[in-house]
Each structure stands twice: as C-alpha cells, then as structure tokens.
Length: 277
Image (tube, rainbow, N blue to C red):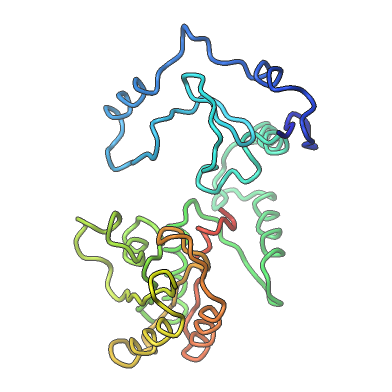
C-alpha cells in the first residue's frame, strides 16, 4: 500500500480504515447504480462504442477504482496502459492544476507554447540512436499510424505497405486495413485500403518460426510485390491484439536490413508497448 497524498510517495503508515475515511463513499441516498447507468448509456451512446465491463467509475486513487455503488476494485487496466503513475498521482495533479491556471487550449498549430516544445525535446532525448530525432504529437495510435504511412508514402513516392498477421494498428480505414485480424475489426466493412499486404508474424505457439516469416516476405517480393513499390514495413515490437507476443530480435534485424536494401521505411508501432501512450 503506497501513500500518494504527498509529492514523494512512501509506504503508507496509516491503516486502511483511515484510508477509506480520507475517501468517503458516496452518499447512499444519492448513489446511482451500475445497472441504471448501463440503461442510460444504451439509450444515449452509439452501439459502436463498446465497453469491457459494466462497472461505472466514480473515483480512483493509485491502483484502485471505486464504482458508483461504492464497491472497490483493483485497476489492472490503467486506461489500457495509460495511467502508468496510478490514478491521481500528486505530481500529475499539481501539474494539471498549474496548467489550468495558465490556459486550457490554444491549438499549437495556431498559437504554440513552450511546454509542447519541451516535451518533444525530452522524448527525442529518450529515443535510442546517435542521430537527430523529431516528434509529432497526435491524439490516438490510429492517427499516429496513419501519419506514419503518409510520411513514408510521401518520402519514398511509393504506395505499398507490408504488415503482419495478428497485428493491430487502429480502427480507422488504413489502420483497420493494416490490422492482421478480421474479427472484430474488419468484418462487415467491405473492401480494405489497396496496396496493403500481410505476412505471418513469428509465434512459436502457432507453429510459425522466424525463418518462415522471413521466407514469406521474400516470397511476397518474388511473386507478388515489387519491393521498389513498397513505401513501408510496419511491425509491432510487441503485439497486443494477436496475443502478447514479442517480435524476435532476429526478425527486427531482418526487417531493418531488408528496408535498408530496398529503400523502404521501417515503422515500429509501439502503441501497444505503452511507449509515449
């Protein structure tokens, strides 16, 4: 149990009863139910926006969530790998409060601001490699992937993209086309974007080796797709939707060498790994 009420989190010294007292439950007389909210949600929100649980959060702290009925849960999802410092970390709360006291939104493309630039500088310093880096901030992983494909196509003046089976790259049309799963992402949506090709991702559990994945790419380039038409190869260093599978180092080196040989842009989709999420 960690005390997050100070700027320097330390093991909690107070007992759990005082912890709960610090975050008292909702007044039962005004408490909403999960069932009631689920009914309201069904009436108000489009069915396309799915949810994984029927637990409606009222408040959260560190690794715990309390629902509208006062029940307490351990949060293993963390907003899908987003709340990496826990809910309501005091440093995060202080930074948000400070920023709200200055301004909320200007649109950086219209009126830029220093902390946008500073964050890009910090991220660039963290990225490995002895070369200059630049950052582009976007809202979603799908948007990041779409822009990566646009950059690759514009830079190479080529149209084709190679992706991997079991991969997930978003729910927009290009992201959906790159995704290597039919259900639940592609079924019922008709033809996908053109010039997108898939090869098997090496997963020992499914009987696919690195050699077989590499051979599939080589066969694709021999029989179906001229490598001089390929703008990018996109790969997840760690797949999330296909199962939590780490890309073998040998595969990543093969892709890097292949891209260098044919002038192809290599895109590492790290949204599922949590980096910059």
